[in-house]
Length: 195
Image (cartoon, rainbow, N blue to C red):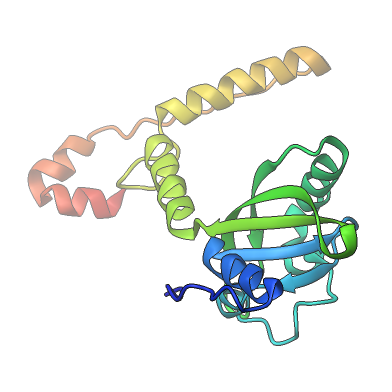
C-alpha cells in the first residue's frame, strides 16, 4: 500500500516528485523519447518481479512480443502530438504475463529534456473476466464448442472471403439420431458425457 506520509517543505523537490510517482499507479515509468526506462517506481519493480534492474532497459523488452509495436506507437503518438494516449498490453513477468492499461504522456523531465511519463494499472483480473465472458457468449457451456452465434459469424466471414477470392467452401452438419433415447434411458449426465 502506498505511503500516505506528506513530503516536508524542506525535502528536496526530487524526493517530493518521487513520492508522487510512487502513489500515481500500479506502474509508473519515466522513459526517454526512444523508449529507454529512466525511472521505475518501487511498485512497478515489485509488480513485474523482474530479475534485472529496469533502468536502462527498453520498455519494449519487457512487453510480450505481440504487443511491442503497441508500445512504439504509443510513445510515437505521445512525442509527436503531445497528447496523452492509452493502450492495453501484456508485460512479461517472472510468472505469467500481466495485462496493463498504460497511459503515455510527453513531459519535460530533468534539465528540460523531453521524456515520456507512463502511468498504468494492472487489469489482468478485468481482462480475464472479459475473455471468459466473450468465450461464454460464443461457445456452448457443455461441450466448449462454438455456438450458433459464432458459427453464423464464421459462415458470413467464409462467404465474404469466398466471394473475394472466387472460391467456394463447404459446411458439414451432423445429426445424432435417437440421442433423446440416451438421455431418457441413461439420464442427462450420461448424455452430456457422451456429447
